[in-house]
Image 1 (cartoon, rainbow, N blue to C red):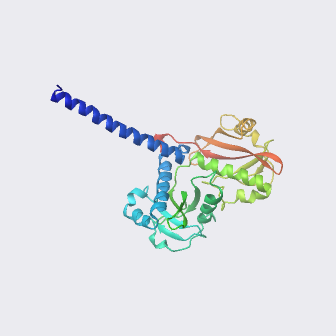
Image 2: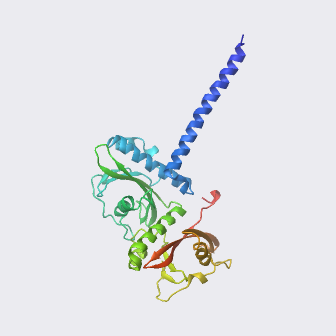
Length: 317
C-alpha cells in the first residue's frame, strides 16, 4: 500500500516530467521555426526579433486579411520593437493599407516616396521581393530619412515579406528600425546581387552600382570591383580616373587584406577577410570585414566586394 507522502512524491515527479516535456517541445518548435526563418544569418538579437515580427505579421495577414489591421493596432506592443518601429502593409502597386506609425497614410500611393539619397523604398522593396528572394529572403532595404522631431538624416533598415490575403490580394508587410546595427548579412546580399547584375549587363551597370539611389549603398558603404590583377574598376569612393591596385593596400598591421581575399577566391566562390583600419570618429584602430565574391564580367573574371563593420561585443551594444 502506497503511503500518502509517496503518492504526492510520485505525482510531483509526473507533473515535473509533463512540464519539462512541454517546455522541451516548445524549445524544439521555436528552434525549428528559427531555422526555417533563417535567423541564424544574423549577429544581433534585435535583427532576429524584427524578422520574426514581420514574418508573424505576414502569417496573420494571410489568415485574417483586413481583420489583422485591428489586431496590429489593439496589440501594438506585440507588433513593435519600440521607437520608430512599426508595421506597415502595402499593395504591390504601392498603396498603403495599414501603417502602425502614421495612420493618416492609409489609402495613399507612396510608390514614389523618395529618401534623402534619391532611393525609392517602395519600389526597392517590391523589386527585392519579386526578383531577389533567393539572395534576400527577408526583403531587406536600407534608406536615409528624417524621422519626425529630427533634423539630420538617419539610416533605416527595413525587413519585408510577401503575403496573400484571403481575398486573393497580394501585399507586402514590413517593419524597420532606425540605426539598426549593421549586419554582415546586409553586405553579403548587396555583393551577391551586384555579381549577378555584372554577369548580366557587364561594366555598363557600373553607374547603377555606384548610385546612392540604388540598392547597393548601405551606411555610406558601396560596392567595389577589381580585376584579378587588383586594378580597381569600379570605385565606391572618389573616382579620380587613375587606376589603383588594391592588392598592394596594407592595413594598420601591415597585412594585405585584398591580396588575401584574392587568394581565398582561387578555391572558393566567396570569402571573408579581416582588415584593421582607423575608425572615422575616433581614429582608433577597428577591425572590419571585407566580403568578396568572384564574378564573370564581359568574359573576364573579377572580384566584387564591400567592407563592413564586424559584430560588436555585447558590452559595447
